[in-house]
Every structure is written in C-alpha cells, then in structure tokens.
Image (cartoon, rainbow, N blue to C red; front, side):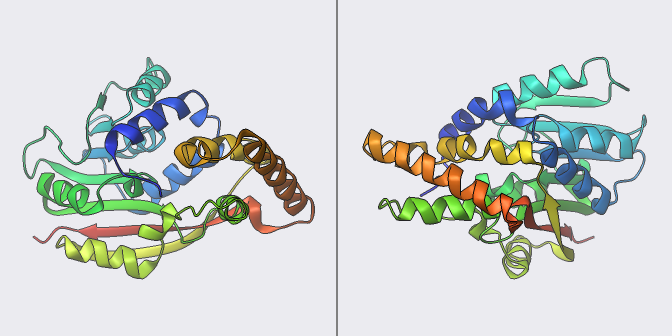
Length: 266
C-alpha cells in the first residue's frame, strides 16, 4: 500500500529530485493546469507541492510582475532544485519554501488561487483542501490535476506484473481518479465545483526509460520483501513488457488525467 505518511513522502521525493525535472511531461502537465485555471495578472497564488517548480514558474508568467507566487513542498531537495532553476530568471516574485501544504503559515483569506499539480494524492486530501479553503479569499479558486484511475498505463502494467510475484499494490491514482471522486472531495470541503476537465498527457520515450526506477522507489518497501532473485526477474519482465507494448504501438505513451477546479463561496 502507498502511504501518505509525510516523512516517507518527503524521503521519496528527496530521492526523486535529481531526475524529476528530466520528465518533460511533468512540465507540460503543470503548465496545462495553470492554463486551465485562468490565473490573472496581480493575483496571489500558492503552488502546493511545487516539486521542481514547473507550475510555480508558469503561474509567475500568468500573474505578471504585480502578482506573487508562493511555492511550497515537503521535500527539501525538490525545493532546492526549484530555487536553482528560478535563480536569476525573471522577476523576483516567486517565493519557494519547504513547508507542509496542509499547514501553511499564511493568513486566512490572503490568496486568490491555490494550484496543485499532481501532488494532492500524496497528501491527506481533506486536510489539504480545508487548509487551502482557509487561505483563499471569498470567491478564490483552487485547481488540481490528477491521474485517472489505472493511469499511467506503465504503472498499471507494473502492478499487474508485481501481482504475479505475490505483491498486491494499491493504485495511488484511485483516490482521486474519477470525475465523481474529484467532485466529491471538493464538495466535501465546501468548494463550489467549477469544472472537471478530462484530457491526456503524452510521454516521451525518455520518460518510459525511467519507469522502473520510478516505481521501484514508490514501492520500495514492498519490493524489499521479495527475494533478490525475484526482484531481478520482476525488473526484467517489466522492462521487456514495457518495450513490447511500446514497440507494438500500445497506449503506454499516453495517460488519462483530470483537471478539477472549485471556488470558495463568496
């Protein structure tokens, strides 16, 4: 089972920080969220779970010099990478900080929008949304993105093969992986649902080459229960199956995603 224990999550993303920005799909995914959110010049925006800063940087372009963006992440290594990427680039209106997105040191009603690209499923969902509602002004906007259930296909393939070695792995996308579930969690925290947009995001071959290492880190505790020989066999089987699917024109190069938006009540 994939835990939302924040210490474990921080450690996992500290480990991923060095290579995270190499996945161009992360950038495109984050920029599309910002585009659909409809941020305006002069707005104050929080990017929750900023990672290496893709959504924060896109938000900076949207709000302009008169706006302000605060990007927070529980992973110190991710924040360090984001700071390095933004150093000397553009106006100095982005603040990046290591912080828990469910406990933000910001006044109530102090921001116009909160965005969260691909990170909400790693947080206590209700606590995060409640905190974002607290800091949003009346009529403020929240925008999140998430994979649909059983996506990305490369992850679903990994879980199916792992099951043949006795590992029953949860689908982390299931928690928010349908329009109905996104609508439910937003409504439960008194957001008015503005829209839920289903789309796809494409992966490049370089992204798929990292698939084993990504899943091996995500499910490290479960994989550690396997004998070393079985772990090696699973890795070989997965890499081969992923290659066959790619070569045959399979669907592993695209993932179904959702962008969900809500507003606070005036």
